[in-house]
Length: 390
Length: 133
Image 1 (cartoon, rainbow over the protein chains, first blue to last red):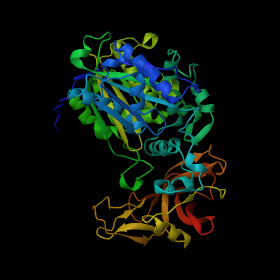
Image 2: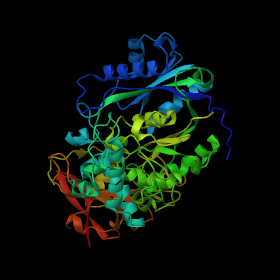
Image 3: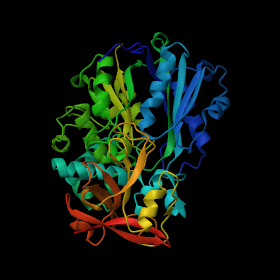
């Protein structure tokens, strides 16, 4: 595999910004986007006049880049990109900014995701289910009651249980571990500790997933700034260098189940070798994994296919404490999408940056030099390798 | 289940499937060149890239590959219900999303042998669902 990576460490995340995360923001998505964006720009020690590119992703539920850029008063505009996509795009949006910076198009690119995911358009609720008729791919899913991501991913979890003996209790370990991190995070929506018994007693949403296997429908926004590395070194925070990135893969989804061999090989199996090679690392070099965790099982599937544990052993791996803050590979140190909130994955990228800076407070993991972040939707996913040293 | 669920809206690529269901037949797209079955219907064979695709009736026999038991859904769906992937006998990996009916949800098992039957969703609109044999 060709591991030459012209973009390696040529850009870095220099600023991060948040709005409060809640179930009812009381604000339009445009305001959320602006508030998180100005927070990130100021965190980077910059002003809107320094920003010359903007990237966002949405599924028809957010503020358009052109509107946000104008409302922020940006002057330069070399790279304005609205991506249409969901969970698989969280790291793609950052990668897109990194490439614009790496080729010299931009000096500082703003990336944001803003949504009213609870008070506005909800992912857990299928609008199509309320229609009289459905076309396209949905004609083969909605009439049968396959309506939401919880159903799609539940099928993958079930098959993993069939093939490898993964248990609902092992899913519970993911929920409990990530919640214990959220307890230390004053931004998190869910901060009360939970036990395996709480998980076991929470109601079924779609067996094998209980309520506590599902992420938090959230109102809020996150933003970050990707800067050229030579400029980044003079900004207030230690840069989180973008060492490599990827989006792709193949695997099971609701759309093409007859076009994959199985339901238990996921996107990281396809992108991880190149991702790691282009960063010049091996899986053992990764100190922290900000894995996309819309549902508990997704952590287990990614741990296996990124190579943190052998295939099929993700369940015992999480039950043995490996993903805790003091474990072999801490996951979801912010509480993840499961407990901090669901800003469509971008909040997990921001947590990786905070950890690399050493500014994660009481949930700080010691000595984070290299972090992995990921996003996952349908049969593809995106990922970043972030490094404290260039 | 309630008849108020959304109806499939067939298009040129999918009409043969739904016409088959209306006639109590499970018909799937099949490649004329390499004889690979394709579901959901596509514009091109994923095995050989041929665009010469036709339709064949299949047996409707298969086994349960994966499933979820849905406990929370809009009122037009009667919970709990089983939605899952059925692997058909005609070809390894040939899977169709459907409901498993005629069986308590907690009795569904991987590899359970099932056979297609047709459930009327509206006048002239049948859903292919699967019952343990």
